[in-house]
Image (cartoon, rainbow, N blue to C red; front, side, top):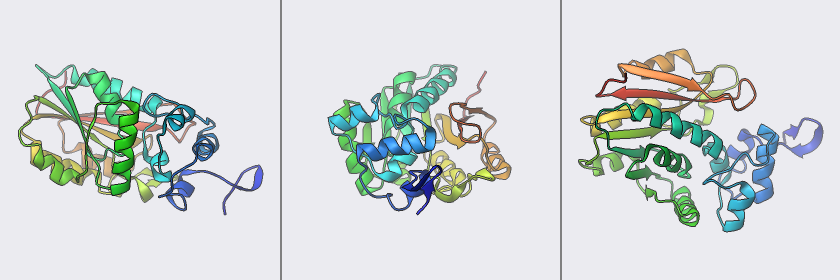
Length: 261
């Protein structure tokens, strides 16, 4: 058992514990708050759907250990949504639709929809338990998200010919062992690799104007980043300095089929 520094014998609720022993367990409110406290110094870190953990738990929202780690909390999802919207507004005559290839809790998707004014927001989630929980949670939170129990590969094909002229695609596959404290995030080791998800998306809906929004880390393995950005004529990366140095999330934006001013 890994003990929290300063508290011998007390289990530290970090990403490795929640992705391991607690991966598929529903977390109690105290555990959600302990993860936030132990990992980020903030018991309200896992605020989602515009609610603090105490608020969403009281309403009946429940999450798994892996969801606590893999979800994008409100503070970050809000920033991501604002930055995506700022670029999307530059697309000529754009009526946007948002697609999340790995929707999970659906929280990021809801914030992107809010800031971009997208008419539709569609998320794919293949995992049975995560899909069931997220569907219930989104309903409790009163969020209008089209969450589909499908793989992103099949789900993209099933979209057919969307009427919107700009498709915003959020890409955040599970990181798992792709994140290293020493070398940062290796985009080739996510599940699936980010480049693979991009290629599948382009093959399915590449005739539309596309804006990819890829969740990254402040340190990205250089070769894996180059492999992704080489697929686009324009890309830009932003790091959100909201955590301690070395623990900050980032966003890679990349456009295809139109020119970003």
